Length: 220
Image (tube, rainbow, N blue to C red; front, side, top):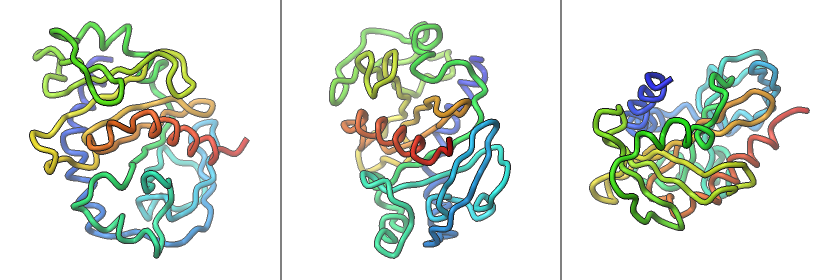
């Protein structure tokens, strides 16, 4: 499991650059036509303008679906929001979600105790908006990351909040994917979502908004 988790570090490193390049290339749509997507045992109904990639905008079974939404409105691509999606220099206006079938029994909050706490090094420090910052051991595969934890029971879930970030040296170097967190949703889904480190002070609102968004798209 550690190998799988450490591999996600690379995703944080390249995620911001890849997301920016993808947006710059276009491929957005203003269509709000619904797509009925089945991932494992879960059925999602998603409008096309929330789905990042054209090949995923179709009804049927899928391994995953990639989504983007404006922050804080959680809206899809439209004539009104076009500038938010096309301006790759602005990193705090969008959230990126990847929904797939869960491969682990615990989401990030559930992994803090059995896995991540054993990889913390040194004394914790105060983070933004009630978060606590933990440095990771150099040989853990997470050496470049800061792991932030939040108070137990936030966002209506059990256990501590947890998010992994690679913090830029300067605020202007922030990307749209400095931070990533995964949460369970539906019957057997995992939602991996990414956001800019500039949005860390809004961590609680983001977590709640992501969960509300996914729950609203599930067909029961």
